Length: 339
Image (cartoon, rainbow, N blue to C red; front, side, top):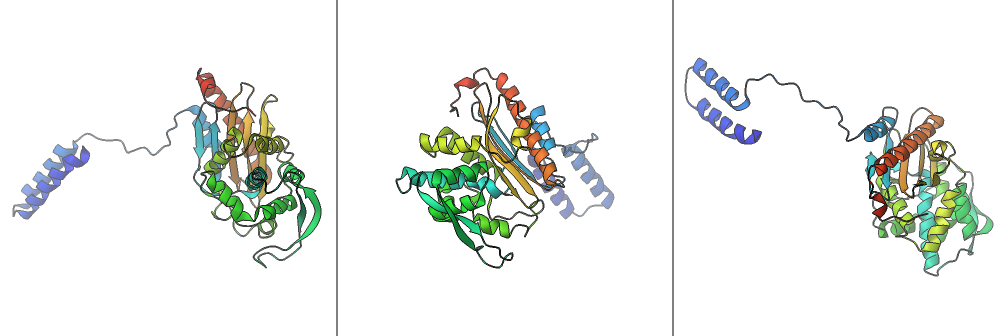
C-alpha cells in the first residue's frame, strides 16, 4: 500500500521538477504532495526489540545469549512436535558428539552382514607429534576389542582410540558422512579422525570463528537424534545398542543430566574441545514424552561456565516443553517411540 501510494507521488514530483516554475511555488507543491501521501502525524521510531511468542522462548533466548561466545540450541518434543532453535542453522564444532554417527555407520554395516558386534579391531593409540605436522596424526595399534565393547567405551567414556578403531573399520570419515547424508541430513561433516582433531585443536577460537571442518548445525544433530530414537535409521537391535550406550554415558555429569529431575531418563553424548563444550541426546519424561536436545556452547570464560549454561538450558527446555504439553491434551496421539 505504501509503495502504491508513493509511485504516483514521485511520478508527479518528477513532472513538477521538469516544469519551470517559481521556487516557492515548487516547494509548496512538494510539501503538499508529501503531506497528502504520508500524513502529518508524529510517528514513533520503529522498535527493533526481540518479540517472543512465549515466556518459554524468551527464557531460552536469555540463557543462550551469545555475549560471551556463540551458543547453539535445537530441541524438539518428539510427542507434541514443538520445536525451539537458537542459531539452529549455524555450524558448531561437534567434538565427540560426532561419535553417535560413527556408531550408526558401523551398526549399519552389521545389519548388512559385513561385520558383527563381536568383530574385533585394534584400539588406535595416538603417537606424539607436533601440531599440524602431518595431514593425519600418527597412531599405533593397541589391544584388540570386540565392536560391541568399542561402541560402549566410545559412547560412555568418550574413548578416542576406540572411536578411531571404528572409524577405520567403516572406511574413514567420508563413509560416516555418506551414512548421515543417506538419512537426509545436511550440514554435518566429519573431516578428520579423532587423533588428528585433538592434536590440532586450538587453531581457531570457536567462540568467534566458524570452522566448517568437523562441524554440524544443532538442527542437523537433532535430525540425527530424532531418526535414531524413532528407529528410522537403524534396526531395533542396533537402536537398542546405541541408545543403551548413550543411557550409560559417564561423562558430562555437570551438563544435561545435572539439573534433571530423578524420574527423567537421559541418553546422551558429550563433546569437548578448545573453548567449546556440548551435550546432545534424548530426555525421556515420566509422562512418556521424549525430547531431542542439542546444546553447543562456546566461550563463557571457562569450561565450568559452559557446563553450567548447558545444564540450565537443558532444564529450561525440559520444564518449558512439559508445560506446553500439559496445555495440549491430545499430545499422546502424536507419533512417538519409547526408549
